[in-house]
Image (tube, rainbow, N blue to C red):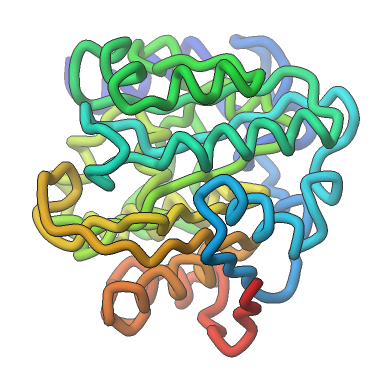
Length: 309
């Protein structure tokens, strides 16, 4: 099936114009129903970044989120929450290729404490079998024990079409349908190197929300696709796991690792990624998709507002 036909197929299933932004008016309508295409901002626009270190993955995740006001700032009683870690590769936690399961589990616990109803942990897994990857990474066991459902979005029917009006290369693409239904969307990436984009942080982690990854790789600019998508798919919260980071042979490894022992939380995806770049000794402007996202108004690079917890 060609890329155009695939996209047309998804649009036919979903109905033209599924909600542009995660959540919002019309996002919970059933597949096949017309939905609003009007973008909306995340639930909160909290000034600054919150960086926790030195207490272990779970405690750092809690401290960083608590510093920005806690999950209750974002989650209301009964909310459907989707958490999207990086679970792409069949690697153990110590390899630093996937999000630390302790970080994911603590996010689930905080969501439950804030009154969330259903909590879903989901990703588009690359290595096969997907169920084996969920187990080997430790994320399934940790997240389920904390009270979440865990699944892999592995079928074309798991995705819906979204418009990207501000995109330069992308004018529409796909998004995991459960994210469209969610009241709250939390992006929980790991910080690591990437052979094509230098780094993969928060915005690059959103590539795991689409059905056809290869289309981005075959485009004239993978970095522009990342920035385009970030204008439309905006998490309510980004929590970057930098407990252990992968320095070489990313995104899958194995490679050299380093242990910053940090977790970074914020509502500005650009600012979170900008801080993440510094952990690798890079300036944010050296990462093309971060620079492009700033130019497109996705967020700001202002590391002076980073608050250490």
